[in-house]
Amino acid sequence: MLHLPRETEQLARLMAVRSGRKPEDVIRVALEREAQALGVVPVQSPLPVGMEKVNAITRRAANRPLLDPRSASEILDEAWSDASRRLHPHGCRDVALTPLTGRQSF
Image (tube, rainbow, N blue to C red; front, top):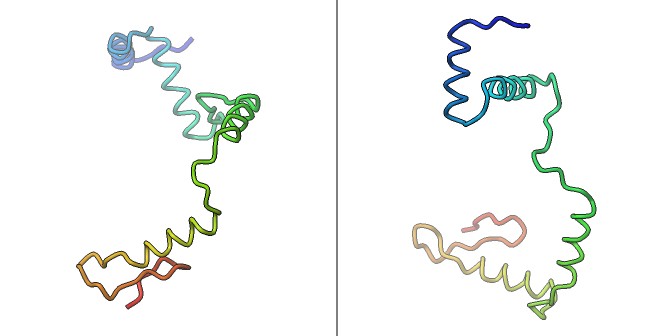
């Protein structure tokens, strides 16, 4: 059993009142966070996702109708042609984005 200093116990009680938990739970959660930060215990995912759920989401997405009948290359060509027509932030019209790098060329 640990004997906590009065200030530590008082802080735990204040946090417990504010959070609606027991002081022991407040201390445990704080210790768990510190242990994870220091690498003493592994960080656990707050919401474990099973493969069944991932597969269900994938099936649902794959079964949705295709909203754009164009091919992927047609969509990309249009996107890049729009990007090359964008104005320079200062309003210059002689600036174009190069399709491969996205960098501005003058």
